[in-house]
Length: 64
Image (cartoon, rainbow, N blue to C red; front, side, top):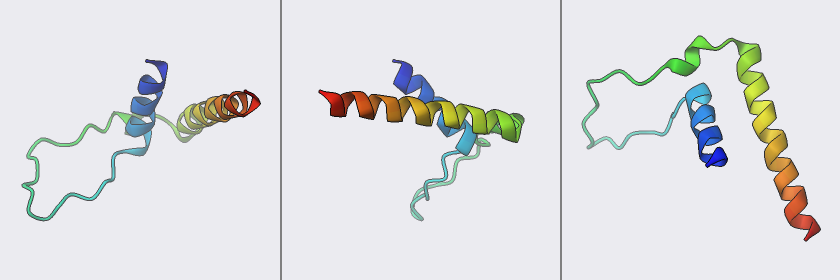
């Protein structure tokens, strides 16, 4: 569950910039831009925290 929350936080910060297929209709609702309200240092802090957690988990997996 914690990983899913962190994924959502990262998507909110970075934005989901996946290209849309050309034959798909564009949504009329504006995309969520809640991540734009965070300062650069807040974004960097969240991403660094998530990155360090992922690296710790990978190291623990390699130890087994």
